[in-house]
Image 1 (tube, rainbow, N blue to C red):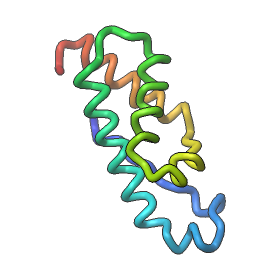
Image 2 (cartoon, rainbow, N blue to C red; image 1 turned 90 degrees about the vertical axis):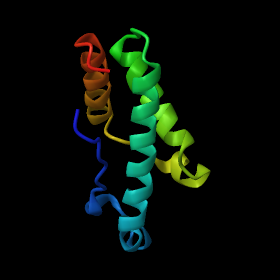
Image 3 (spheres, rainbow, N blue to C red; image 1 turned 90 degrees about the horizontal axis):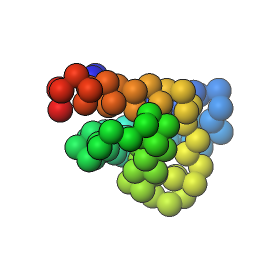
Length: 94
């Protein structure tokens, strides 16, 4: 599985957020990578939906509370990461 990555849509950002876009993306990506590693390491045959929710919860827990509160990712993309975690486990490639 390639590294999961978050890219913020500049059209949905205010002026201050656009100015901070780079550091914000860095923080989001770092939290997502740590969450994916943790979820992958602790995966125990849960359904994809549960893995997806856990991935979101773990990512949010790695963010500053103010950022976590406003973090509303594309859940289809998050679930693709969850599917990759499940498939990787099923293939025995932990």
